[in-house]
Length: 306
Image (cartoon, rainbow, N blue to C red; front, side, top):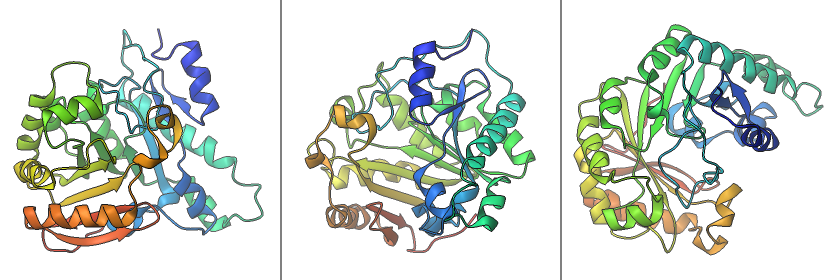
C-alpha cells in the first residue's frame, strides 16, 4: 500500500510534485527556477547562505495533523498513513533522483545559466518542509543522518505537535512554526486534528536545549493571527531561538479557497509587527526581504551561514 491514493497522485502531479519512495515527495520551488536563470534567490540565501538552485524541497510524508488556513498546499486532501514506512536510505536516494529528473527539464531554456544548471544536479541542501508534518515519519532522525552522510545540510520545519521527535532530531537548522499567540487563535488558524497546543509549548521548551541552530517561524495573516506581539514574544522566549522569521501570508495555491487577498499583510506591516516582537523579546532585526515579505530577527542583529 502506498500513502497516496490515485486521485492524490494525480493532484500532486498536476501541481509539480514528484513522489519519492512510496510516501514522500519532492517539488522544485519558484526560487530554484529564478536562481538557475540568475533572476534572484530565496530569502534563505540572504539569511543563511543557501544556494537556491542546489536545494531539495521535500517531505518524508504527506500526512499532516494541521489544516492551516494559510497553507498553500491541498490540506483538504487527506493522505493515508502507510502500513509500512520506507527506509531513510530509500527516501534519500529517491529524493535525489527525482530532484535531478525535475532539474533536467530546465536544460533546454536559452535563459539558463549552464554552470548553475549543472550544479543543480549535485544538490547540497534539503528543506524537509514541502508538505505534511515531517515528525510523523517515525525514522526522521535516521533520515536526517542519512542526508548528512551524503554531505547535505538539513532544514527541518515542524509544527511542534510531536515534542518527543523534536527532542530526537538534530538537523542543521530546526524550525518550529508558531502561528498563534494563544490556544484560541491556534484553533482558528491551524485547525489541528486533536488537542495539541500543550505539545507545542513542550516542543518550544525542548527546543531550547537543541544542538541544532534554532529558528521560530511565524506566518502572519491579517484578521487571523496578526495580534498580540507580546504574547508571541513570551512563547518564543521559551525556546530562546537563534532566529525568528516573521513572514506574511501569501495569497497563493489552495489557501485562496480559504482566505482573501486582503488577509495578506504588506511588508511594512510585517516589519512594524516584527519591531514590536523584537522589542518585547530583546532581539534585533538582522535582515529582511521585501519581495518575500519576511523579516529576520536574531539575538544580536547578525546572521550566520551554513
